[in-house]
Image 1 (cartoon, protein in one colour):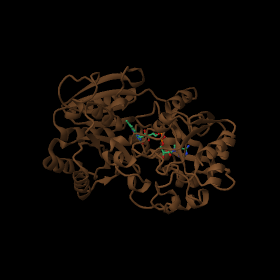
Image 2: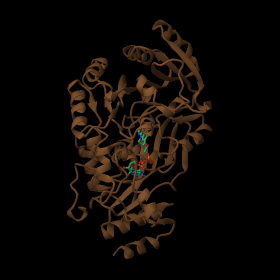
Image 3: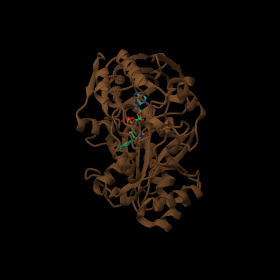
Image 4: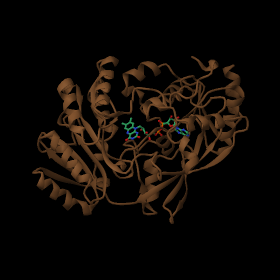
Length: 448
Ligand code: FAD
């Protein structure tokens, strides 16, 4: 019975238990409501209990109880994911890792940091400052999201222009995780062994700490370039990403999106915007490139010192601001076809008009500069959404569908055999976040 199972958790030391219905409901949700499709599927999915362990022994004991009673266990960082990654599909226990928040070690010879999985990225970056370092990659939710949630559920973001994506070799150096089996154990994984746990939505291990490569801490300066012609914004961004300057961010917002951004994001004229973060040394080169393109750039100042920085209107924060105006906005994520970006955008504009508004992000894809897009679109049913996705695919875009629940669906669309193998080894009963890995069939007893 439910009471009996809660009693078991009460016996665990250093474990906070949250039973209050409204808290359990809140902690069973993430930001899946950006997708009307996921909203319909997930609104009723609520855990039985939320627990917060503050040491490894408590983590192991939670896993042991879940194993013994065959209870699903879903990990949670800060619950800012957009795919319902942290939502328990089959009830059970949600384990929030927020008490695991220490920077354990920094190695100055490699620049690697060992940090506990529940550490908020904003706090981690602050602590890295004293070593003259910073995180290479940040989601635009870095002020609240955890590093463990980013590795297990995120992909890239601010910094991807230089460092690519979290799964690119060299970003994650190793990790420690507790297994979900009869005798849960804390295991150490090197870079290669960590790969199947990287972006697996916590389906094949309970990550307790991570070893990550960091970058030299730099002062980043934010600039906004005004541009009347949309096609030119793409040419400018491409020219900037191939120039010999250090960049942290490069994004394009179509003017109809700019109009919906917060008031502080004021502009001199109504135009499309290219948003750039570079080091101080890059500013003159950016200005020179702007002069050649006959466009104007405005230096806003050092990003960290701005009351509102441009980091707040990029990546999925663009969608956040659009949705704060009108909840009918949703979005897509894709890698645009190399050198055919504008053909794709023009085709979609002709067919879909202002139903699809363009937001682009410069990224490094396996070392090459590429453009990703997070267009926002007005929700008009799943059929129309699918047609828009099909149009993008036909024109060579690679879609990372944010309207699906599984690791595979939101990623490359194929089952990763190594992720499934890791699940078989570290979660043989399939108790960790069941229903999120397509390569693993969910057992009957968990069907809702
Ligand atoms: P959660 O949402 O709590 O968890 C994410 C996944 O990780 C879940 O599957 C969870 O089960 C698993 N998990 C959490 N902790 C552990 C653990 N210790 N062990 C194993 N599994 C674990 N994402 C990006 O990649 N880039 C962006 O730029 C970006 N921008 C965003 C902007 C907005 C406005 C919003 C709402 C979301 C955005 N996201 C982005 C998604 C999300 O914010 C990030 O991926 C974030 O890093 C997730 O961290 P979290 O702590 O909230 O994780």
